[in-house]
Length: 164
Image (cartoon, rainbow, N blue to C red; front, side, top):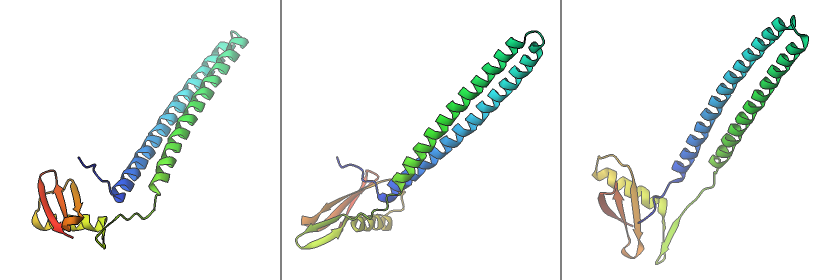
């Protein structure tokens, strides 16, 4: 069974979509980090207020509460920074893959003739569209140089041929 051939445009579109999803994920992580930091800040303020109230009773106990709240805030901030950094690295890596601007051409040579595969696929698509108005989900093209033909199957059910 022939593998589905992914075009460069589909591949690049998939990478761009993945990069966009990673960007959304990064934004979600950053938003979550902001909310977490806000909660930690509220907890620190609450602890500070509590510490102030109890400072009258015990100066040492108040210092411990403030120090613990500060450590919690610092720990949460570090965790958020790591999550955002990891999300940013993922987005950057996917964006680098999408930059692949190498021009690729596949040519079939037979009996002194050259046929560019992308052109054969385009001709098969054009032939199908001229004969059918059904939606096109996938196409498989089989080039048979000895017959000077290309056979194609659309959506796994419609089959036809074109001359090369």
